[in-house]
Image (tube, rainbow, N blue to C red):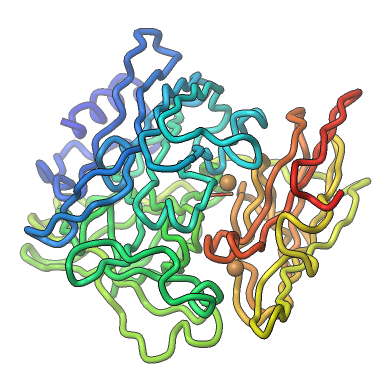
Amino acid sequence: MRFLTALAVALACGCSSHEEPARAGVEGWDREIAVPVAIDRNPDPNVVEIDLEARLADVEIRPGVKTRAWTYDGGVPGPTIRAKVGDELVVHFKNSLPEATTIHWHGVRVPNAMDGAGGPSIAAGATFEYRFRLPDAGTYWYHPHVHSAAQVGYGLYGALIVEDPGEPWFGDEATIVLSDVGLLEDGTIGDATLGGPIADLFGREGDPMLANGKVAPTIHARAGRPQRWRLVNAAKSRYFQLVMEGHVFHRIGGDGGLRESPVDTARLLLVPGERADVVVVPKGAPGAVLPLRWVPFDRGYGSAFARDPETVLSVRIDAAAEQSAQPLPTRLRSIAPISLEGALRRRVEFTQMEEGGTTVFGIDGARFPAGEPLRAKVGDTDVWEVVNSTDWNHPFHLHGFFFQVLGNDGVPEGEWKDTIDVPKKESRSLVVRYDDRPGAWMFHCHILDHADLGMMSTLIVEGDGTTVPTPPGHAH
Ligand code: C2O
Ligand code: CU
Ligand code: CU
């Protein structure tokens, strides 16, 4: 079905450079990882209007065992929201959870009041209407920004795909939300405080790992026929380092849509919050099963020691190759580097402090909401140096604005990012320009246990003549 639609589109647009091969893929190839797509109830082709409810529901993670999870519309992950670039998205949201929540649209350049973070939350039983335009094609996701380690860990997350109808066909497409869940023997999800302060510090990695809510599912393939995987790391703490033996990942994009040029990698790393858009060309004889493996990544003391690789999902070759895959275009898009001329410089530091005999994390020595927010003006260009003086890696995430990472040569890289790893005792520099969306925007470590510990702060972007009040709780 999906294949036929894709084929029809390919024929209709007459895309010449990178057509979908005439030979079909495997019918029902992605059935095991299928996630419902949110139903658009608005006939306007440029508006996607959906209902979404956060509620407790029983899901089946281990076969035959019911697990009470916190869900969007009863599923883990929640429904995939699909729209095309430029569309307006309207979400009639109902909070049927036992506590307050919000929805944060991770990566989307929303107006500040729609960001679902830092502002008022939606009380248990209350409703809220999110309404904003989707200005950029890409792979995004949505999740709560209240008690996020707990709420995300209990199952609240979903993918948001913003398509660019002008994009060539790269392969049979699947959106794959990677996560994990702290499942106990009896099938319940362990409390978010399990393990105490040591677990806060380490960041809780659940077991088992999940791909679209399934444990080690299988997808099917025809050898030589490319698949495009839009991967989202929705785990609250786990780094996903992925390997598929004998294969490379052609990384065509990530957080903010396509990269300028594809880049090949045998080990694909996604830190919490990050996305990767990759093309994989499965190879093997019919009947071969290719495991996609999670490989331990050393993000600091205790994170990789005595841990074995695990299968996240498997790709089964059902049929032989008919024709060899066309090479990817060497240029996917042009991304103008943000000019560094006149840029302001700022430095933020991920810090660890001793408090009452335990180590805690913060930013610039303070735990959110203590500490002073940063200030900037609409139209400013800033170079951020993000320094990590702690003993563990931390994924840095900025709300509201994409940035470009500066390479070792100091030149901005050809990709739009909103989340990057900052290795222990290292720093990363990035450049960001604030377009006209004033407000208080959060930035934080996306290991959600760390964010909740206080590794979070606010950037206040002021427009002409507007003054953005300091959010409640902050020192100033
Ligand atoms: Cu996914 Cu504050 O972020
Ligand atoms: Cu975000
Ligand atoms: Cu962290």
